[in-house]
Length: 169
Image (tube, rainbow, N blue to C red; front, side, top):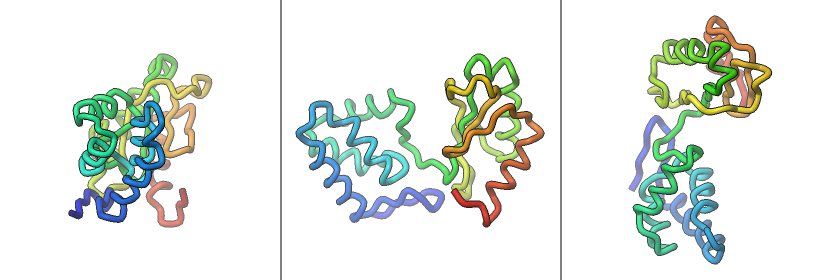
């Protein structure tokens, strides 16, 4: 029962046992589903179907309800994400100051569409709502690092720095 994509997201017995432990920890909590899903996503980097089936059985919830919650909240992902998730703010201030051109350049340089992940599993590109750094517009984040006042011409240099082996996250 091993499933991998892009060298990540391994679904194996050990990780599924962790899922059962998480469920046991939150089972008695009113509204346990969201904290359980957060923990599962921390374990796998996304919400694999095998783990959601265990949640359904253990919490006695229909899969439709679990998928409803998982797809409603943008934080959750049903697909594996890259090692680095690049989020480009498309809020009003960022959009007016050129976020679309930054997003387009990222898609071009990475050769993936928005919401896509590079074949090597290194990068996922997301467009997002306001990141709360409007004074630095346009803004993107890569993991926890914030990049502000971006221009499309800065993108190749930033990506190159992320690809170098010496880069630590």
